[in-house]
Amino acid sequence: MLAVFCLRLALGMLVSLALLSPRLMHPRFFRTHFATVLGLGVVALVMGWTSPLDDSWVTPYRRAALVVAAVAPLLGALVWIYERPPLGWTLIAVAALGQVAALVLHDVEQIGAYSPWMTAEIPWAVAALVAGDLTSAALLGFAMTGMLVGHSYLIQPGLSIHPLMGQLAGLGAALIVRAAVAGAALWFWTGDHDITNLGDEAVLWLPVRWLVGLTGPLVLGWMAYRTAKIRSTQSATGILYVVVILVFLGELTSLLLARHTGLPL
Image (tube, rainbow, N blue to C red):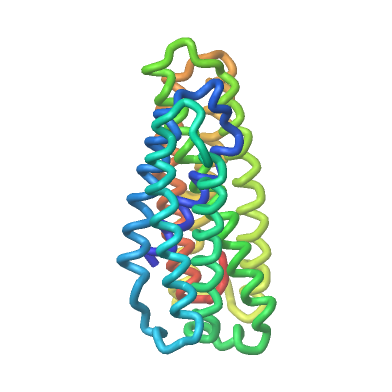
């Protein structure tokens, strides 16, 4: 579970860079971003190298993807030393593809391991789990990058407000899409389960997942957006710190629910 969380966060952090311009952000921001992604990739490599399903044909390919997801950020951290780095954006794409591949192969490896319904609808199951991975990555990435961009205003007072507003817009879009995927999964799950049955562990975790992981970040994200519009960047950054904490808690809870139900709730 920790490996999946790290891969999602690393992927989201890299994807969120697409809304940032090197002309506005100092190269050290990209370098630090890559260093953070490198740390996440190493943790994912160590924690995800072994699995109870290591006899699967998917295992060697998943391990190769984990290696790419760890090595590419290392190269990226090195090349972003320069103001106009050679292969800078290419390494962003390579690292992101490695992380996507590792997540997809992990999902394929898990099919049927925890939820019997998966074996009957394997293509649908893979699509649902991958949708959960990608939307979770986007939400985690924009929350974290938005907070880090806000922090940059402390050391770059003259920085344009556009990078922060772009990240907040991405955060809002990611929240809506993530809620849509989780809502569809919840609708599917309630077809066979009683949502009022407090004896079901998943039912007890659902309010935490939705209130803390989705509703809270949506409300606070809107507050950060309104605060950033009046250029109160320090206040917006403080709000985004709380958003990051809530999103982390929500996505970790989602992983627990996925382990229990097999769905990206």
